[in-house]
Image (tube, rainbow, N blue to C red; front, side, top):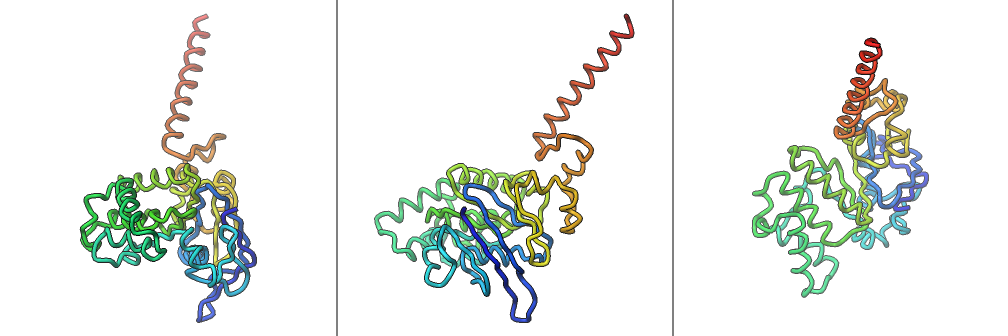
Length: 281
């Protein structure tokens, strides 16, 4: 397991509940969505997974390390965090320096740094941005730079807080493909979102939160094809799930829906042809 959480509770200073009796296991090499409406505790839970927030009661174990002060340096090297707003983690004068910051912080050998930076810049197609100040970049470019600063350290787990918010269609597709590539390499991706359509199509596993509690957890196919999940969590059904609600097969992507409809049309036309030929007899 990548993450093990036991009896986790968290309350804000005004006694407002953040998380209550959370018990979870999250598998390695999977894309896990933390899903819920605004205020359900998604970001709070995510912050506990690399020690931005420490447990008040209960425990969080990441890659066999307890999330506590003495382990934070190693945990944060192994667990990269992408904030919703990349401006929260971009602060150097150039893109190059921003990517280099983590390597400096973890005292990588000087002779290795430039090669690692150039490799990640090439992978993310930001070679031509290395000398730009981050504030001059678009949101999509800033997110690429923020990700570059994470993956240059080659973390085992990548945490993303609403990673696709504010992105145009092409950039969103690019980020999904990039995250898919990392999962194929054995990385673990855990992201918070309120986007049920994205989760239904793309996530392997899902954790559904409501008022700081985990109310459902399992594979996306198990949890988000259950009508009760949406009633209990106050979530709107994904469009594809709603569209194919009366069908035995429930496509989870546009491509799957196209194949299903194409197959349905072929069967319908074949039956129609048989009836016509049968009538002629």
